[in-house]
Length: 159
Image: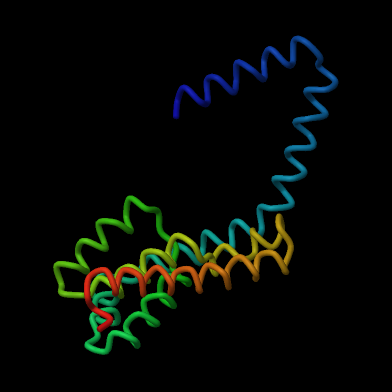
């Protein structure tokens, strides 16, 4: 990350030396865009922080249901409204597996976690528009369910 910052500073200095007016105009334009997205981004960060307070036991409790259909739907819903990076989601999937949660439920949870962004809706709406954001999220839910069902067939949990 340090190298990326150094590279950015270096390129900015070269740009500033080459054409000060254009560089300053670009910096001002970037700051305007940053200020425009900042409120939505802060709301998203607050929501993510609250969601990350949810413990593993809570997730295991709601995903470790005996009813595969209800557990899969619950997994997709929890995954849709939760946001966490892959390096946290995959170890959590391993914990769920050790706790005896079926593969189909884990598949629906992790897939919707990566594909659906209810928490990121304000930021996505800002860039893509309301219609595209809703369409992307709805398709993500259906794709997550499809992948979960495929995993269930593969591991013999559906029939």
